Amino acid sequence: MPAEQDALFPGKQFISTVLEALETKTRMTGVIAHRYLMRAAMAGMIVAVFYIVNYAIVGVCDGLRIGDTSLAGLGKMLGALSFGPALVFIYYTKSELLTSNMMVVAIGHYYKRISTWRALRVLVMCLAGNFAGGLVFAAMYRFSTLVEAATGEQAVHSVAAKLHYLSSASGIGDLFVRAVLCNFMINLAMLLIYNGFIREDWSKIFAMLISVFVFAFLGLEHSVANTVLFTVVGLTHGIDVLPALGNVAVALLGNFVGGGLLIGGYYAYANDDSRWLRRQPHHNEAQAAT
Image (cartoon, rainbow, N blue to C red; front, top):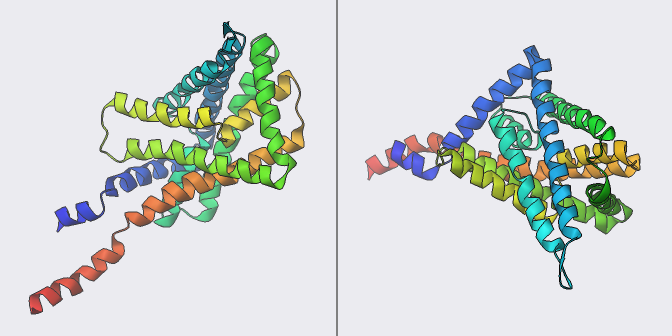
């Protein structure tokens, strides 16, 4: 019976690992909330560093040419690759990132391990910490030249494109879909890491690098990354606050659908063996009768 159960519900270890992680997050946000905020702030700092690396690479390549051919496309690819290690650093420093926590609390809520209120507490505290970390580095960038010249131009151009989504209903729909796909990719990588089938660190790192490359290269929308970017550009170049808040709000909703529902809710239900176990006695009795 256990072998059959493992074959029918191969993601049980994934669920178990996520629920263990949820227990830690729930306790931290209660008894040592300030340390949880510190972990979340570190994730925001890491994103702030790698975002600038990304735009620096894009800016350099945008100004290079081979004959009449621009290397802007190569810069976009290399920039997306350079952003990938951000998730790796966040994972291995045990920092707290809002978008992966969306999956964790969704699974916990499905299995009744966390209430709606406590789930919101975890997410809100994580977002606050992510923002605070990004704000610290944005303030430092304000007094440096790191976000000037080509790097600053690329960052400002990216912000303008992100805020433009709010100019029409179709743009908001586009933003929402990009946010859904973004966190679907991020939490797909976390699924591979938590499911117990991948044990080597290099395999985990590769999964994270690929997932972030896909979202960065395609221009998908990550609520935390956008929050950090808007904070950096806002302090260094200025930003229209209301559209920025609107972008983050839509991205948050889309990210929750992509990571919380399409990964968390989907795999929570797919690996729920409770109804199957309740039916087994009747199934066994029917087999014995024949």
